[in-house]
Length: 120
Length: 115
Image (tube, each protein chain N blue to C red):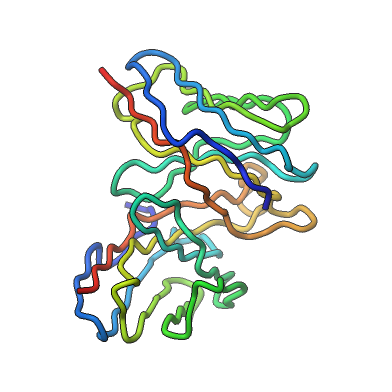
């Protein structure tokens, strides 16, 4: 499978614990995004990277959240001191900077299947 | 990015065309209309996008009104596997002046294809 992969797919944790999610983007994609989705809502943007640089962070990304993409390939999203309100699906997406790989690339996002977090 | 308005839900008969409307009355001249869908328990999937001309690909057709204030996504022959939430999004395309680098999702339209 050459799509975006996320791990773990499901995580149940107790309030106050730290959790970390990993995202492996499509191999040649230089942009990587994190979104959060709660039940019945559309995905909400959290942050994105271009290569290893984190270029934008949403106000939703509180100081308990940290995302890294140290070598411009995979990324991790860590949540410290989890709260019940953090329960959600965490989605990762990747894209290729337009203009690369020929003229057909228009930078659309490819999403993984998400990591579902339940905080008890 | 400009906001979009979609009906919260709609039903469609299997084998018939599904026409999904979207209003984007405040769209700017350099903003494209994108459609994504999300099947239950999966991540969103790109369907199609366009600027002002109608577009067609293997998944769907996109009809954009002449004033660009609304559009319709057409699934020509809906199947049960097309049951999903469909999101209409407007954004400045990559490489354009003022381009944002993220998609801003609304609530979408929950489409149920019935046998």
